[in-house]
Length: 273
Image (cartoon, rainbow, N blue to C red):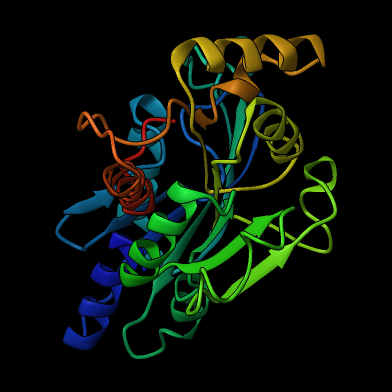
């Protein structure tokens, strides 16, 4: 459950109405991607962000107005000065932002939108994946472990994972699996080629987070290959790699903790992608 969800549920329990702004679609380069949220209370206190700068200022202004109108609406923002009504932001893309008034007495829409549990797709059932899965489950992620080796992806090694999946090959990493804005992708396969194959497919999907393990030189080589495949720098900027917060982790367990910390930060709306 995200920080916004916790705050919203607490306000509902107190009987306090609030406004939620959520990025529902983006085109081109934007400061935050789909799923970014901002919650505003009637006194102007806000939590989260939809991107900062003039976009954030305009969204905050509309949120305050929404306390008066109590009307929910999707707003389209042009983040360029070249078009009429543009916000003159350097990123230059477009963003659609849903701004919704939440009545504490009728919070059904907020509950249905924000109660979805985040799912961690752990690609790689080796030492890091095995150390990571129980930690993520402990901090309220649904866990899905995926590998092409039955000797590694099995219930003996992952007895309490929500799902353990053996695929034919990382060339078809998402066999029968869908992702969405609540999907967190962790790429920790046994080698360079597996990581590349999974990341190549992941960049074409909707996700909340993409993290890939590896040294800086290995990451640079994977990125070079992906550029040759036609992926842009904007695509690559979605990826947290080398994965995890910098805590000088060395063991699989320490690496798992650093990855979990980074994912919690992103889930709480404080990621830097």
